Length: 130
Image (cartoon, rainbow, N blue to C red; front, side):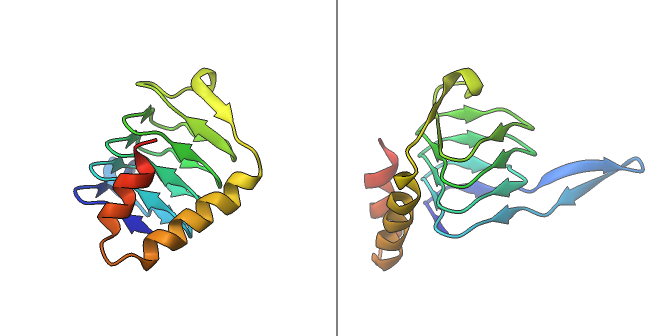
C-alpha cells in the first residue's frame, strides 16, 4: 500500500452495547491512496486506486480492481463492486463505470512502479490526478 502525503486512514466505528467500538480496517495488496484522501472504509480490496482528495465513507466496502477518482466522494456503508471506476461528488451506482478486467493488472503494475520510487508522493501525484 502506498499512502500519499496528508492522507488519512480512519477506522470505522460501530455501536456495540451502547459503546462506540472501532472496527478494524482491512487493506489489500497493490493499493494506492492519493494525497489528502480520507478513507474510513471497513474494507479496501487489492489493486485499488483512491485518488487525491477522495473521500471514502465509513463502513464502505471497496472490492478489487476499483479506481476512485480524485475528489470523488463514496458515501457511508456503500459497496463499490469489483472493476469499477467511481467518480463525482457523490459516487453512487449511477455514477460508476465498469472497467475492463485488464485494469487489475494495470493497477498492480502502477502500484509496483510506485513502490519502486523513493518518493512515493511524486508517483501518486502522477497517477491519481486522472
